[in-house]
Amino acid sequence: MAIRVMLVDDQVLLRTGFRMVLAAQPDMEVVAEAGDGAEAIEVLRSTAVDVVLMDVRMPRLDGVEATRRICARTEPPKVLILTTFDLDEYAFSGLKAGASGFMLKDVPPGELLSAIRAVHSGDAVVAPSTTRRLLDRFSPMLPSGKKEPRHKHVEKLTGREREVMLLVAQGLSNGEIAARLVLSEATVKTHVGRILTKLGLRDRVQVVVLAYETGLVRAGGGAG
Image (cartoon, rainbow, N blue to C red; front, side, top):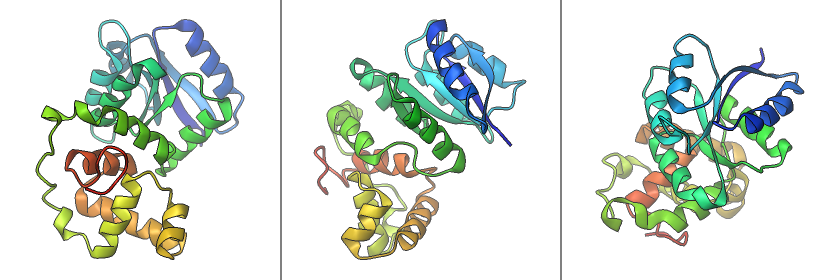
């Protein structure tokens, strides 16, 4: 079954470009479009969507608030924030709002398609190192610029799970973590799954955000 994609952007030409790229894929189908967040939410009431490509700066309702409302729904579609270098702070807010990741608007078509497939399958959304660089730059935007109380379930992690969590938060992929800890990738994937379950998190992007918010990882990628 084809991945049902929704395009949300106030620039028609950009939506057209993305639609042409996706339409050429046998496993993808653009089932809906919207020019702003409010329209996107309205369309989602009557259209089944798997992945939403969400712009951030739009009239009426921006992509961050739209993402927050969409992710609060029961069984929501995955959301990929679309951003540019000069709007990275919006991508940070989008991750906090529940987006599964972010992509640059000028991303090569192949990377965009891979990200959509990864999101749909529940795997890592974007390169963890990219997420880390974003959070390094905007970690001062966390509330009061201070550490928040540690997540109540972090202490339930085993020593190995804590090690894996810190490496995920520092931007390492499963393969890199496996090499660092001398484990198989399958074992690392199992650990990541257990971490998500114990902490009540949706994906590794949320692990990164949590680690920065609680001070488990400092800006710059080091352990706290």
